Length: 223
Image 1: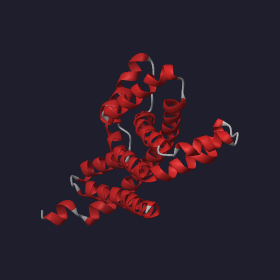
Image 2 (image 1 turned 180 degrees about the vertical axis):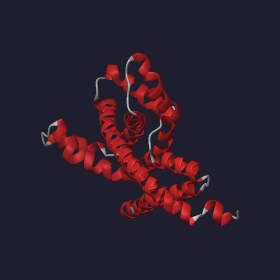
Image 3 (image 1 turned 135 degrees about the vertical axis):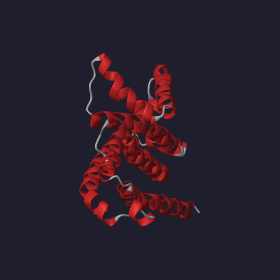
Image 4 (image 1 turned 30 degrees about the horizontal axis):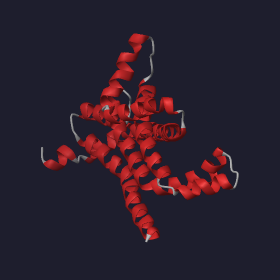
């Protein structure tokens, strides 16, 4: 067999396409849900770390540092295989979502914290002088500006979450990589893996380009 028949076999790719598209749908569902939950958790952690009770600040720092340090693959194994020993059983999808969301929240918290701290103190003082409540100040004044600052790094974090969904195959979840691996085994040909790689590129390349575009746009605005 030559290179084309081995890695770019059109017939094998066509036969595997239904499996790949099913896996792509699962990957998108997992990635989007994990990103949304990570953003919500990250915002809560950032606010708790900045404005929460001082006595608990070390707890939030510990969470953020721990989940930024632990490899996602290890966390997936713990959630899916270890938690049942303490009576907690999660489906493959729930396990992958939990692991990805926990890690995404830790990274999102640090990104959002940096964005909030980048807002000039005068904005906070002016809000207090106007008599705005804490939630009005954060929702109307601070967070809109902070989000604008952190869009490029936050987009990069979202890309990482989407790429990390490929690790969910270790808990037998039928994501894109898992389906490609099964199609490869059925066809005894690695072409489905090449097809999966192409789908990942088509999914993630626009997001990668968006990061560069946003960074250039905000750099021009700052100048």
